[in-house]
Length: 434
Ligand code: ASP
Image 1 (tube, protein in one colour):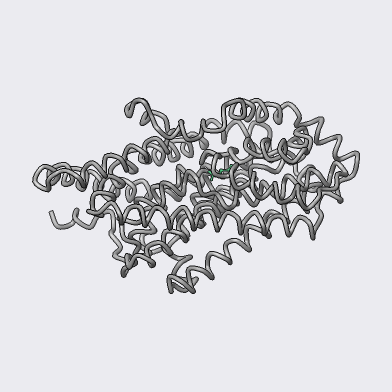
Image 2 (cartoon, helix red, strand yellow):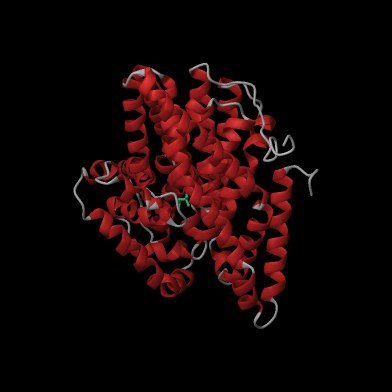
């Protein structure tokens, strides 16, 4: 396997996973065998990736911010990052809205199919609604309050508190810039070394990636619902996927024009992260790999990637916002509602905010979709319509989410003169020398 490039190895793992999944669905008891004996390896793989996320953010962000040596540089980078994230999200929602209005996938849903879907999935949809209601019931500034943890150890024990860990790391980094160099040095050296160790651990985990995705996809295939319902949703899925493809094209164009990296270099550099995003449906689990690829294979300075990517993984979800816009209008169409231009503008605003608020885990986009639907006056029961096909679309939109973060990190790096020639490190670089 040594000679084959990593993204091919992962692709082979994915294809074999799908094939094995298909074979095992053919006979009685096959599903259970996959669930008992293959799926756990996928879970172990995702756990290992998630395990790295919090220490990685802490170490790399503290190192990255303190390396800046100057707080004004931090605010410049922060401003550009947030600005670009907002722009790409608005582009995504607009593409989604445009496509769903032109293709009108909701009109192809017959009354019978609609009732069947609502009947089959309303239970599942209710769970999402309850979760969204919890988030809705808090005050308008709750999102801001949630960023500041009252206990850093508490915050770092929960992967969903990533923004709190980011806040602490930036704050700590600023403190480090402001103390005398002599005192700061040992602390910086410590986090520097710590960061190197974490990056090496990512290299090691990536050795298992082809096997991990194999297990994940085999399990997904045996657990997927019947293909019949997929058929009813084919136009909806087509609209979302077409939008996502347009987004990937958009990223390639801006990276090419602004960061001057051609699409094949960009895609080759980022593809292992994309494939993992696809297989895990989680930008957070993919974050360690995105960081490694962007830094080592695309040449983004660590000062930039350590800042832009963790923030992107939590707040920038272009794929999710595009999907939310399409899904909202699709549901409205299926219920025979006509949405005015004003309501659609409202969807741009809420889908942008909802994607910022979505957690970087599987299915999170659907929870926040409830809020988009509520704001636009679309029946929330409509969630049941799109439930059957949410997981495959989640896989696709997560891939776009991760690609968006990587693209923005390249643009920010370019604008700050921090895009270098890539320097690839292998897992055994130092090992042979001993
Ligand atoms: N799974 C997505 C992510 O992690 C979020 C979502 O759209 O559900 O980026």
